[in-house]
Structures are given as C-alpha cells and as structure tokens.
Length: 264
Image (tube, rainbow, N blue to C red):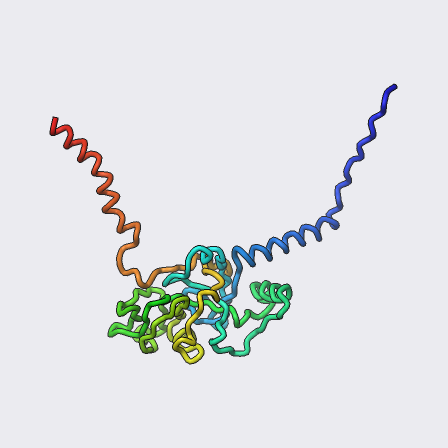
C-alpha cells in the first residue's frame, strides 16, 4: 500500500512592512552595543581644541569617532586626545543635561551627533599633557610647557597671535591614576590649569576617560585622523631608533661568512 508523502507547504515570505520594524530594531540594538562597548561618535561643542578639532562659534562642530577599546589594554599617554566624563571637581556651566534614563540619554546623545539635541556638557575632549608621577609647569623662556623640567614639542598648539604667550602656572605633580589635560587652543581652554580652581581639582581620573579620539567623520570636508603626537618624545621614534640594530643584524651574516672564507 503506497503512503502518500505529506505536501510541503512553501514558506510564505514576510511582507516588507513586517520585516522593516524587525530590521530597524536589530540595527538599533547593534548601534547601542557598538556605541556602548566599541566606538562612539561625539560632538565637539567648543573651540578649546582649535585647530585640531573644530568647535568654533558659527562653524559646524566636528563629529569625532572615539575608540573605547584601546584603554582597556593601556592607560592614556601624553599626546592622546581623549574624551572623558566631567570630573566632579570640575566646574559646571548649566549646559545641556542628560536624562537619568539610560535609553533616553542615549537618544539625546545620538540626536546631538546630527544637531537634533545639544551636546552634553559632561562629555569633555582635551589632550593629555602629563600623567601620574610627572611634574608639569608653564613656561620656559621660549614659551614652552615643561614636564619634569624638559620642554614639550607641541606643534598642535594654537595661539591666534604668534607673539602671544601661554598662561603661566606653577609646577604641580600629577598623582598616580590621574591625568593633566589641556586644550590645543591654549589660551582659550578651561582645563586642568583652572577647572575647580586648578591644582588637584583640575586633574582627570583615568577611570573617567571614555576613549581615544581617532577620526573626524563629519563634516566631510574635515575627514582626517586625530593626531596623537607625543610632546614628550623629542628623540627619534622607537622604530627609527631600532634601525641601526636592524642594519647591524643584517650585515652580521655576510661579515661572518666572509671571515670564514678568509680563515680557509
């Protein structure tokens, strides 16, 4: 007796209007996960980092992609441009606040990237100048910031008038686990020199750092990487310093071979 096989019902493809909310939901979840754990876009709201990052009055503030992975493996270094949460010792200016609800807060931050909401005053971007254990002061006779008594090489510093001098401050030693940060627009930046009255109140805890600014992604005319020139490295980079050793190793083989032949 033949047994008839049950007919296989062809699966009906879901209409697009049903799939669209699913796709949008998945995209939203992935976006939140990426911005929470991997990378996030921040708006530059002020001119304190001119001309490295634009936030000047009347111009389109840069949108920068911030890497949140790097500092899981190392601490911020001198020269890094970092985004951090405003320390409790820093001053507040009554700027845009964020909701205590994390979802609403995320949407506010997301909207700020496209000009639909004000940037949060609690997200700050500055450049690391000195780290724990180092003593920083300003300035020497050539108008250069000193760290541990040695002048810094700071090609990124912006002073509108070439003859302008940087604001002076007395030597201060950075505690371990803290950072001394400054803006590239050196005389138009409220940073570790003055926030909270300066001194230890102006330091930034490493735990407050959100990530490292990597790339300017908007506006398109400003697409470029964010430099992290180490102002304390006045000698050649490590890879250049290793050139003599590499050349010596490469020449060692023919020299030894020639010696053997001469002995024969």
